[in-house]
Structure formats: structure tokens, C-alpha cells
Length: 144
Image (cartoon, rainbow, N blue to C red; front, side, top):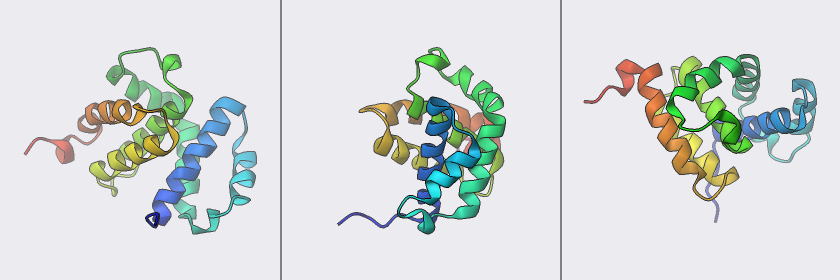
């Protein structure tokens, strides 16, 4: 039996799918929302989190990419689109949603990469976010 997904996890799944539609398909936020609302299970997602994260990532994508880039050893364009979307989402949460512990943000991103990404994509996502977290959450991510 599959584990029950929390409303927040479902919201993040829909954000990743929406960001993919935006990055790969060029869809705008209105089209993304209409499509997401028609998918089974959308009503079980945390709607406020979904809307906030989707808007924040799409609005601040260049800034978020600039935060991520120093922790990535290859050009942004060589990263798979789904991993780019997951990294942007996680960078946004690390930067803007400080009420969510950084370890939760990283774990959620790893789970999203396991669900949507390539075979070892979760390892790449984990490596990048392990470097980004101390830069954005120095007090919380400091070694104990």
C-alpha cells in the first residue's frame, strides 16, 4: 500500500509539474493552474502553498538560479528540466519559507527527484541543496 501524501507534499508535486509546463512548454501561470485544477487529487493539495510557491518561483526564477549556480559544476542548460524545476522550488522554499525546516525542504526535494527525475537525479539534487542550505540558512544549517 502506498504511503498517504501530505497536502504540502501534493502541493509541491503540482508545483514541479507546473514549473515543468512553464519551462518546457512555455505555458503561463493561468494555463498551468487550469490544468492542475483538472487533475485528480488536486483538491487534496495545500492550495495556499501551491499558489505561493508556483508564483514565487516563476517570478524569481533568475534570482533563484543565481543562488543555485555556484553550487552546480555544470552549465544550467545541461541540467535536466525536471531537476531544474525541483532545484528552483527548493531554493525558493529555503529562501522564502523559513518556517519550513531546511532538512524538510531538502528531503521533499529528494523525494520529488525520486518520483519525477532520472535514476540518480535525487543524488544530484541532494548534493546541490546540501551546499545551498548553509548559504541561505546559516544559523539553522550550521554544524552542531
